[in-house]
Length: 456
Image (tube, rainbow, N blue to C red; front, top):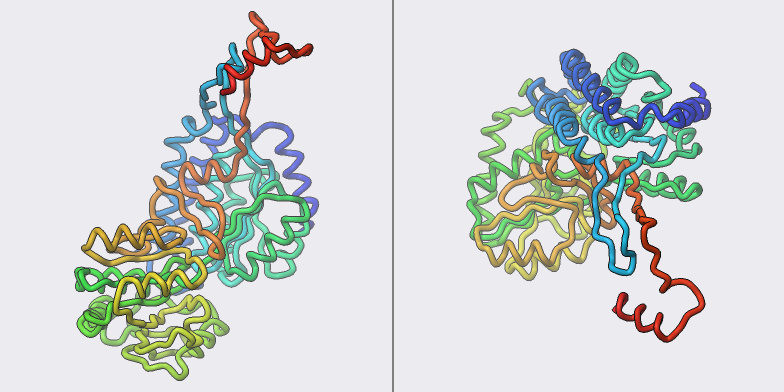
């Protein structure tokens, strides 16, 4: 594929203004939603091939969330696109001030392999709603889903409007050599830095949805049974291959033993005595990541789990006990079904531990004490999170989702997606029936007094 020619073709199409009318955008969103519904079995089968996801999990975390986002965007798009009034300062009398949104133009969306459908389609919903042309780059690590996405998009949109570029590093490199008007990237920190570096040559704005080591803090007042169930769900969903999965557990030493006993039980309740025989348990994406995750277990105390099947690339949910802060498993985002356990004696200690590290994409706090909740929410910096639950904060179109610091920049979902993929212009419309002379030369003492009155 001639990527440069594709970008130029989209730029020419955008210049026609065809994508700007709100009615056009609404129709595009509806066509996409209907085609996803029609192809749902094929999408789920592709996710099964790439990650061994069940139909239930595929709908819950991929197609269902995408359909919900498309429906929400359709419902609210007219309101988002409408110009918004602002008050005019007295010095600009008589005028009308307003803001209006315009699409950036041709945008690039680069998606990862862990939720390969949803993390491609949800940003696309924002790009379409904002009036852009778009090139999608699915992950080569999820080839079946990538192929389904290409077939889906080709059935709905002409390539000059929305197109899919499949492939690996060669295609990624070629895409990043082009001049886009906006780049939206979801993935790891290393590639995120490269994307930002390439974008800087053209001063292209970017959104980076990255990751990091997201802590789960269990304070002694927490409802331990509910905390264990919700932690097990968030940690081992998609075999731990979730950017906002709890990456490590900080549990207060006074409740460590009963909490870990409950957590082990919840793992058994969800996945059975032999998780690798559970037909709904996902697999690790490829052999490289499978071996990397197993390597993180070396030298650690495995409290439960860790059984592995090289043929199916599955690893049973793991709890590591007595992990040290300097251990290899604490030096990188795990992105697998491995939960290191560390303890703290006071909330001060837990707060300090998190603050001394890079800002995470998510933070989860289990407590029934309002003072502890307030303190940790105010004093810890992270992209987003939950109190007394895990990961569900990203499953809504009514709040923005994104990182901070090394976990990313920018946010999306619902209104935030529309704003991410559009530029807000500020306009002052000045009326002609009066023209105050104060700003024009010659400057006099009288004009100076009036100026200070207006601008005091």
